[in-house]
Image (tube, rainbow, N blue to C red; front, side, top):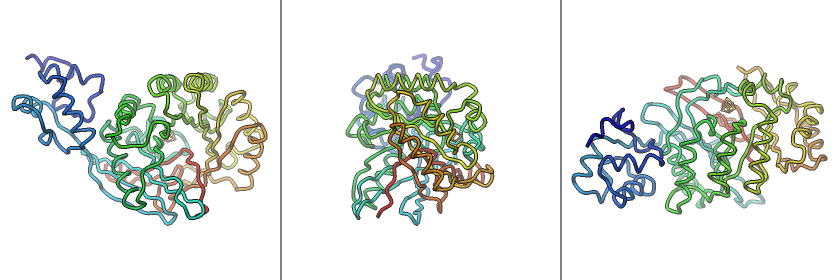
Amino acid sequence: MSSRKHHLFQQLPVDLGNLSLSEWPEFFDHLGIDGSSRQKVFEAIFHRHVSGVDEIEGLAGRQREELARVAVLLRPGRHELSRSMDGSFRLTLQLHDGHLAETVIIPEWSDGELRKCSASISSQIGCFFGCSFCATGRMGFHRNLTTVELLEQVRQAEQVIRTEFDTDMTHLYFMGMGEPMHNYRAVSDALRIMRSDAAPGPPHSRITVSTVGLFRQIRMLAQDHPEVRLAVSIHSADQQKRYEIMPVSSRLGLPEIRDAMAWHQRQTGSAPTVQYLVMENVNDSTDDARKLVAFLGDLRANVTLIMYNDVPEAGLKRTEREKIEAFRALVEQAGYPVDIRWCYGEDIGAGCGQLQVASCQDRVSFSIRHGLKTDRSR
Ligand code: SF4
């Protein structure tokens, strides 16, 4: 076998948790591991969550040796679970290279009943896009999370939810640290794996992927995962202003983003959520609200206004509640349903735009920058 010459075997060992699903057939063909044995490996990793290649059962002796020679499975372990005074949790997983991936778990109560229990997972360590309001962006980009690292956040969050609330995870959001669409391959593979009841996570219709507007990936998501919901962070419908707070906007024109959202809506039949982080004297005027309405036009969309958590390094402040309410009224009058997200988890550094970073190897914290509908009438 000439496996060492094949591009998949250039860098050994291969992390099976980071192998693209599209590369699985080729990879295992080169190892001489056939379809049924391949399926055993798949189920061991993604359904039974084994912690190493040596725990994969059902392989012939020679197959096991070949796999162990070239492959490893780098699964994260639990590092810490913090509870906020408001009832949310921050779950921190330690990755094999010392990075920390953070997941936020948010229970939502109404009239004493737990009506929703969601998790928001990270997709990258740091972020490439450097939005001015987000301390994660100032960390720079370190790496993408692997498929197994994404799914492990979901699985461990499910365990926390069962232990703490004796219920299942109702909703899952790809809205933590990083831009999920910038790690599309692993996110898409994780979504594909989650189609199986044997894998962790809620049904696709209760999963949302957010983006700053990577329009090519918005179209890919509609094609690959039509039941998955889309959330787009607009934050300003003025191209220049958006560029100033989101430098990535120089490559993401608002018209192209809107076209992709409309296309997504036609393909999937579902209305995207438009997320808008409201910042004092930046994007919170009535003129800003009118521009948002003009941007939406005839698009069916739900709008989530997110109350900004003060991040002193960013020099940005939270808008007064009255002003947010006025913004909401204007958008609602134009016919769009609006939720306001009053942040969770500020005391554990898990609120909107919050971040606590000692060093990227040491304390990588979290920015839930996107809207989770809330009801705090517990
Ligand atoms: S808001 Fe999102 S895209 Fe922007 S820097 Fe933060 S994590 Fe990255």
